Image 1 (spheres, rainbow, N blue to C red):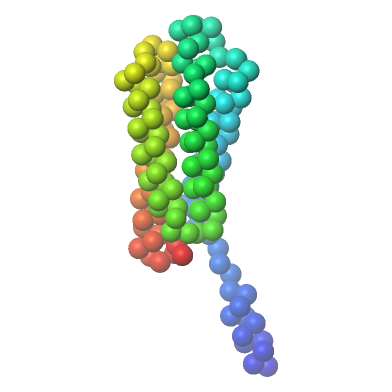
Image 2 (image 1 turned 180 degrees about the vertical axis):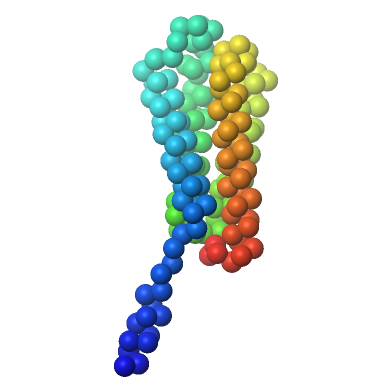
Amino acid sequence: MSDQGTHSNETEDVSKPIGILISIGFCIVFIAFFAVVIIATQFDLFPAYAAEGYYFQQTGLFVNFLSNMLICLGLACSLCQLKKDAIYWALGLFLFDLVSTSYWVFTHNWFDIVGFKELVAISIFWTGVCIIFVYCLNLKKKKRLS
């Protein structure tokens, strides 16, 4: 009989908060977005009006999007495992993308090439990553992250 009591404690249901699931979904969407951009870049599928194509052909863009994709994957894995590392992955992802995008904005004719749509996508991405960062800090404060 005492065996049943310990068994019920061991099978305690540990469910993930809905915010974690939404955050993981956000990461998956942007991993897919980064993958599409990388594939389109490699197969030269971007429109011809892209200022002679130099922006999308440079190795820097490939490295930038691949790095974003890998950091986003690290964030998603940390979120799945409810690890404190998710805080640092989220902060790192935001800072890396902020610095790399700022580099592209200031060193290339960025707005003329990618236009307003990309600015909207980046704003959504940065806002989402900042929300995930703050959410992870909140979960850490509540001791939900290990």
